[in-house]
Length: 218
Ligand code: E4P
Image (tube, rainbow, N blue to C red; front, side, top):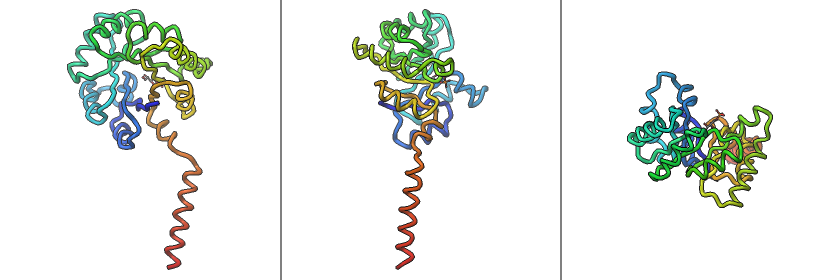
C-alpha cells in the first residue's frame, strides 16, 4: 500500500517527502484554507508539485458538470499530470466520465458507501477516496465499509485505485492495508505518529548509553 500525505502545509509536505515514504499528496479546499485563507491556490499547488513529483490531487469547487470540466482544464494548464478531485455527486460522475474519455485521471472524493464506490468506478475514476474518519464520526464502522469495498474490487476486478482517506490515527493505516486499499492518504501528524514506538526510543537510548559506557571505559 502506498502512502500519500494529506496536507497543504509546505513544511509538513517537505519533511514527509524527505522521509522517502510518500508517493503523492492529496489536497482539498479545507486543507488549503487551514494553512492561509488568503492563499493563492495555484501558487500553493505548484509549490507542492515542485516538492513531491508524484501524485497530486487538486479538488474542483464547481458543483455542475460544465463548471467542473472548466476547472479541471484550468488546473491541467498549471501542470499536466494533475489528478482532478471530483465530489461524489451525480454532476461529478458525468464530469469524471467526460474526463475519462479525455484520458484525464480523476479522484472521486467523499465516498462513504460501496454503491458510491461502484458508481465512481463505472464512471471511469482512476481513484476512489473512501473516507474513514468521517464514517467513524457518525458511529459507522469505517473498517467494515472499506473491507466491503475492497472485497467488491477483488470480485469485480475494478481498475480504479482505492484511496483510504479521512485517516485520523495509525490504526486506520493498518486497517487500510489489511483491507487491501491501494493507497492511504495520511495527515502529517498521523504519519509521524505512525513511525513512533516507545520500544524503539528506549531501545535506541540503551544502545547509545551502552556505547557511551564503552567509550568511557577506554
Ligand atoms: C482526502 O482526500 C480527503 O479530502 C481528506 O482525507 C479528508 O479528511 P478529513 O475527513 O479529516 O477532513
